[in-house]
Length: 91
Figure 1 (tube, rainbow, N blue to C red):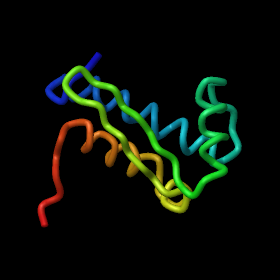
Figure 2: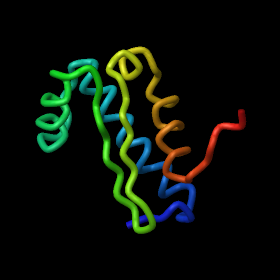
Figure 3: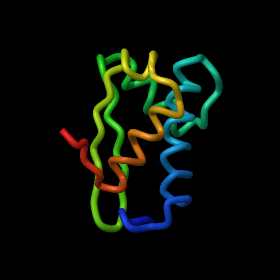
């Protein structure tokens, strides 16, 4: 398990994997069965809810399919990583 203070490379690898599977599914590529079943169920809705369980928190990210479709994998991974690290937008 990881925490928001885990090494960046570990958190980045997890965020990259989540984004990779989402975009692969969206492109019609094969994804692991456990991912494919859940993503296919979510595809019937307007958005997907992704749960990221960490030692110090549980994240519940809701992403509209329109965002998943038009956002590059690297940008999705960066967003997920930012949420995992507990960073906020400076606004």
